[in-house]
Length: 112
Length: 113
Image (cartoon, rainbow over all chains, first blue to last red; front, top):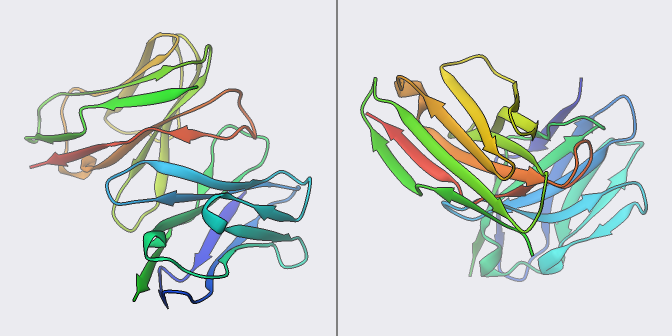
């Protein structure tokens, strides 16, 4: 069965610092992987999607993620955090099925 | 472009009362539609999905039901709400199934008292 684990329910960084949000997946076949962002009381917005075309995926708002099969990871990074990046981030996996399997989310706080 | 609407945005209902949440999609045809529930600290849970009019698949047995009376309309219902039904309900659509990207609506915050 597929699963997603997001390490760290809460990550705090200073403005301008590197953002690293961790995601590990479990899948028996090559997965499709997603990162979504959710601002308070809003729906989820797609940040980026891995579809096996390239291991380094660039998304919106300066975020990117690298697929590492050997580590079964799909960590999300941004070189320099901005106050507007404060939100909850969800990693999800989809393996040629219908449902997205979501992690429990990581709340990112950015301090000035 | 495609847009997805949900209403109401917030709802406070007493235990035992009925529920109807609506989701509509514009700008596409024959989308796959999904209902998710987000409870505090528990991530997102898929409740129902639909690949066409009148076709509903349930992922979690509970006192909720879903219907799809029109191609781009998806309704979540309950005859009698429980306290445990409180949460943030999200509707999503995708153009196909499988690995297609799902796009989410703005959500409905339901509080059952």
